[in-house]
Length: 354
Ligand SMILES: C[S@@+](CC[C@H](N)C(=O)[O-])C[C@H]1O[C@@H](n2cnc3c(N)ncnc32)[C@H](O)[C@@H]1O
Ligand code: SF4
Image 1 (cartoon, helix red, strand yellow):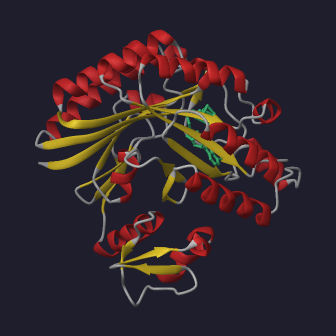
Image 2: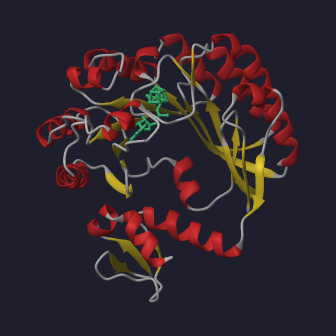
């Protein structure tokens, strides 16, 4: 059976973080009922289209999936189980905002088959958490993390951001030291992207965002690559590190150019070499506007996309003398992979070779 992966977007947040450009709505409790009714309708509709596919992974992301009452998430997963064919070794991930992690929700997630938790920690110092407008302390995060452990969901990942305003290399080193003593098996380290339309973007335009220099940002990145590797977290993608066998399958399948279907407002799909997305507008989504801007992917665009995705991975892509850049890549067996310079300059390298 041909594999397929599902992404479910939960576009609700308590408040917008000043750096975040992900599509989500605040104070939208009134729309939960209609939103999830529509989501379940979309699940049923899409399951008829992809009835001969085998679902490898489900990723419930956001927004803040654990802000909404857990019954909505459980109902979606149950509907997926009823209407799609699932792989026996399916990976089902849910993103969790520390403050809203609750015992009852975790128990319900586990019972329905969710087997991977991705916690958005972002920083470990309370002042820095506050500066990022995160609504918890590190101590509170630890309590929630212990709850996840106690419930028995073993596959736990955390997200960290580095290079945000006033962030120093020493603070970053301390954060990595703290998180690597936890019993987790996946760490994502994202260099802060300053997105134009966010409060950080606007402050940056006025020159009021005290960001570390590019040199410090790269020092932080190199430090993370070395340190996490020493601590048994193998880098498998530019921003992702995992203990052996605990790579996030959902993301790996995406980078390997497997098909995925996005469900929910703002979700993107790429399936059978066609791409489309749902509108970033909850009302339009509820009104049944799905799969807009649908278009076939041209052969040349597919080639470029495969190179771009493959080069993000530590396994790289098949060696091609025409694309090989000695300064940025190394040859390993049949493959070429980005060296640390190449990882630093990913965008520029891709631009140069495609
Ligand atoms: C949808 S969010 C995570 C889930 C949850 N809403 C939360 O904030 O904890 C996915 C991840 O993207 C990363 N992220 C979001 N905005 C970013 C930015 N501007 N630059 C770098 N990383 C970012 C964060 O690490 C975040 O955990
Ligand atoms: S970072 Fe997470 S919680 Fe903050 S606005 Fe973005 S999706 Fe919502």
